[in-house]
Image (cartoon, rainbow, N blue to C red):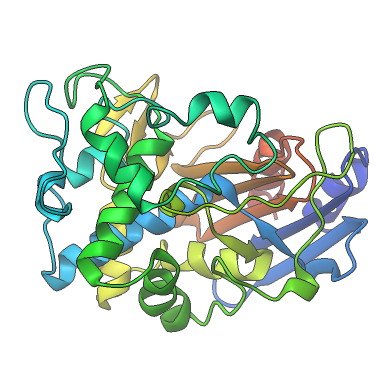
Length: 328
């Protein structure tokens, strides 16, 4: 294992049931590695949790580029008649939802308690469109839009719902039509090849449940493979003028700031540092039995994906692999 990525993986203690790592280093240079308990090996499919939010952001930018809506449209323009958005200061926009500056709470009213108790093994499964629409006017924003960064699954889930409604289709089909099919991402969606879907495990390694996200799908419902996620990262480093690449670049424009990082549409954007001397786009994700990491340095044409079927974080491993891959 002379490759620095392989050496880094070899030194990593095997604390997770299964791990797949994907690295893209420009052009067609893609490497895939896997370790542990995965029947489909590097072809395994995982729940990617909140990395879904970057897909939702890309949908927003792509639909805006086509003229179907505006990134800064008021959310209220894309809701059913009679469903009123809560108001605190100015009206909340689609961009506010995607960049976590809407002021909305993390979860809709009525979801948190079941998610912690009776529905904790599959907390979003019963939250359908009717429940979401009933919760919207009952929501109390925690702050005015743009006043502060407040991470919200509710906000991005609501964005995915609004985009699907504008397109007249489901969120799953919207992702397939606008992202997965154009990019050839055959393993990405809410419904995937069950034979290659990895078995979920909790933090301690005990069996867990798959999550089924309904109306809030845009916040974390997608499943994907390492190869597919690398294809999605490659889109976000594409300098061409094809519409989907233009939309991907729009997601990377800073909208607000949190700590020393900026927030685009979906992405966290980190400036160059001593340990990673290049700008980094980053998002992580997790469900009840999975964790996921996606990091991209567009100017270096360098991307890393880490997927595991156990609820143990992979962010630190992802950053170590980015450093290793950049030294090749």
